[in-house]
Length: 226
Image (cartoon, rainbow, N blue to C red; front, side, top):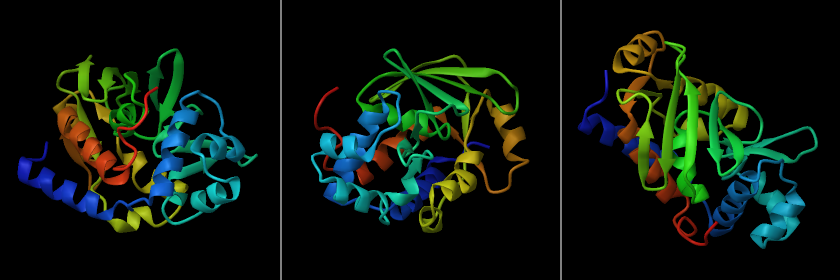
C-alpha cells in the first residue's frame, strides 16, 4: 500500500536525520566525483583531486572518513567505480545521460542523481515482480515521462545504523530492497514478500531524493554547470 502524506513525512524526517551531513570539503569532493563518474570511466584519486581542487592526500583522507566511506565503491586498482548511488559498472538500474550509459545502485538513486549531475537522464529498470522494463525521463526538477503511469517504488525506511557501515552493507541492507514496480498491484505483491518495505509513488520518491540532495550538498548543489 502506498504510504499516506503523514507517513511519508515521518519517513522523510527519519531519513534526513539519519543521513550523515557532509563538510564543505566532502561536498566538494563528492560533487566532483559525480561529475567524473558521469564520463563513464573509473576515477583515479589523483584525477579527482585535480578536478575538486583538493590535494590528493586530503582526497584519500576524505574518501576513507566517516562521511564518504559508505558512499564509495572501488575496483581492484582502488579507482572509484561507484559513488552515492552512481556507478560505471553494469547494475540493474540504467541511466543514459547524453551519449553515456551509467548505472545506479537502486531505483531511488535514478531519481535524485540527475539533479546532482545537472542533466536529464533516460532511465530503464526491470520490475522484479512483473519482469517488464520501466522507462522514465528524469530531470533535475521532476519526472518528465514514464512508460508506466501507475509505477511505484519499493522503499525500506532507514535509520542512522544504515549509514555507519561500508558500501557493501549499504547495498545489501538498503539498495537490494529498492526497485521500480510496474503498478500498485505488482508493488503490493512484491512488498508483501519483503518485510519492512513500503511503496512510494514516483513523485514521493522523487521529492524524497530532492530533500536528501539538499541536506547532503547544500553548499554545492546548484553551483557550476555541465
